Image 1 (spheres, rainbow, N blue to C red):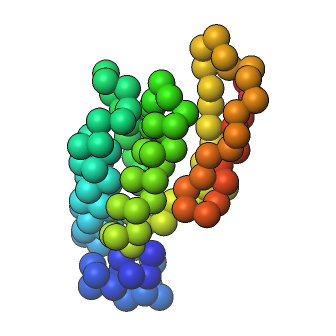
Image 2: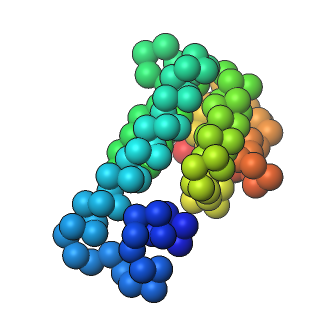
Image 3: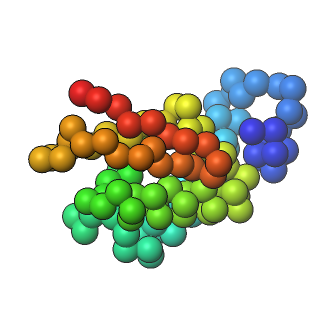
Length: 120
């Protein structure tokens, strides 16, 4: 985060509180997110209706294949690394729906960190 603040010309020790600083920060954050979304769309790995959903700073990946979902996570990791964005596997989770929702599936990973499957 300090690297992003430095690129924005904001002091690292100062919190973002003023409206113009927040707008500047939001703009650059969405430029980073757009870079990742573009890479995911070009990969053609997600569902053909929608491969990812965005809400605020959350990214939801959708795939009918566990293997392709891992490939999408790899894209997020590598593209994110190139733009100084780190994904937190501990704040991430995997959810399986459909007829195989109760099957044991190996955890996926982002970088070297495992993402655990959630049961409903």
